[in-house]
Image 1 (cartoon, rainbow, N blue to C red):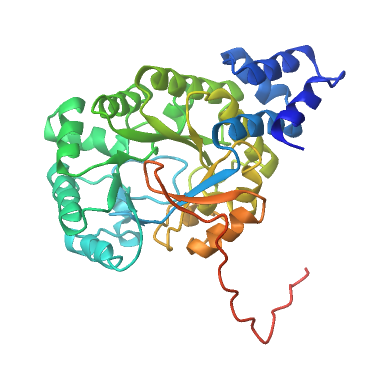
Image 2: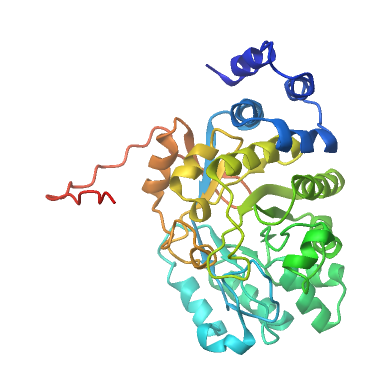
Length: 397
């Protein structure tokens, strides 16, 4: 049953409540849903209903295509001047013994280790420390582009930029222009957490606020550049806080058109100051992906990080509005694994990603950071690996 037929069947359901039917009709007509309707979806809509709507939108935008890229991460440090309650990754300066601080030379050595590999993107994000200042990152970006001009530099969040611009005594517009001139090509979406101050002040009080986060992205967009956006969900926020967050992103996108992708980030409770808060269920994860796809009508892409939610949930998400599952990573990020993600050594080959996407009937397409198509893997068959002589049996507790 295709997406159009699924939606038509849903609209004929005599038991569907009138407000939910009205939302479904809006989706069919390509109309925007309201804030109140967004809250209603969180409060009332079941998973199957949301899946039909989100899959309809996904199919209209992308057909059967699912994107991935070949990338690696560099995390300069996990030491940080900030004390976010949800963070399992960063270590405060007083916990320096548990942290790392890469030098410029060490990070360039990581970049050079990929010289013979067909990666297209380096994703740079980490903790905030005084020595990782504006000059440091400008020199780093310039060094990367000098060494490998074809490697796309996607780096740092408004949390980092706010700190280094303030320290350098430059305004956001000047700072972002200087970063672009140094080699920065796009921004990841991190540091957004939950925008509403009622929640933000409880979980991330010290770092840049919502207005500052949005303003830095806006200045970047004014330069004609692209960025992503995130939302950390499933902790102490209420549903309306999520919709408030989505509304602010949708409004800025109306203004600038600079966002490419929205990535919902699942709160993980291992080894942080919010370990007492239970994590969301897989059903709630899928509902959240679907509602994000429905609400953010002006965002082209919704991404699920397979490294954060695991391969199985990532596959499921492709039927709930998601059209991108990130990249190969090559075990270069610790942000998710230190928080208790299913993927403790997150790395997948191109073959792995293609097989994962094909297994749920989707078309795997390799993209670059800006969603230019590099390879269509729909009809590519990889040679089967030699089968091992022995197989480990599952352990039943």
